[in-house]
Image (cartoon, rainbow, N blue to C red; front, side, top):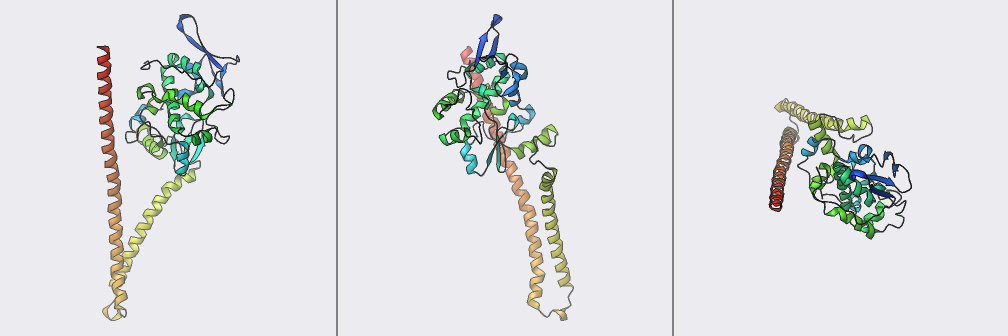
Length: 333
């Protein structure tokens, strides 16, 4: 399936690649320094890009998983880099494209831009060589349109600590204005021109993706949130301890009530204290029962709200598809 319209990169920030058209109209990608590997990816040959390009991992591992994320926001729901830190999240640089824009508590995972994605020759080659890889790479680059919105984001991304934007090779004098000008070429790409991962979803909560992985893919997790098994088990132990505490308090209240009721009338030397001792456990049990009703009710309310949001999103997507289909039919007509 071809992209909806030809995509041409006018601005080139990495000039060490060249695309040549050989006999039969086939395009080949080469490095000008005659090396046979993509920069920073020694296992990816230029001429064999369609079989070994690492950007192939940018596509979702399962269409059924992305289809289950209807309660998430749109593809533009990506916070700028500095805003993540405002929310108390540390930026974790990871080359695994599956983790790009996943966040968990105080961390957000971001994949750095490979140098070849800044090359006009690469985009000239890949959109005809492999449309699926083009959609994956284009969707990935489109996320940086939202990540780098201000100069402070650019300074953070090019810092030695993060290194999200390559500054080696011929990008030593890369400026914020030049980079934004390059990114603007991806800003108007339609969702139909990017892979499913970046078509409808921006940043995603790792816990939600893990839960959906258990339900849809029948796997324990999409990516472990903790590096140690003890930390993973602690998440469930905390819930068990909370339940145990509630039950213990409930049973303690019942024991106090029974003990007070067993006192004979002649032994009630402190009638006020006895009255408090009788009704306080009852009040605590009533409060616990109320919480046991209210908390599940809130959870059900949140699920219903998400279900309504899902229906609205699906309806909006259906209208967009019908509108796009009608426009394409009118153009053909």
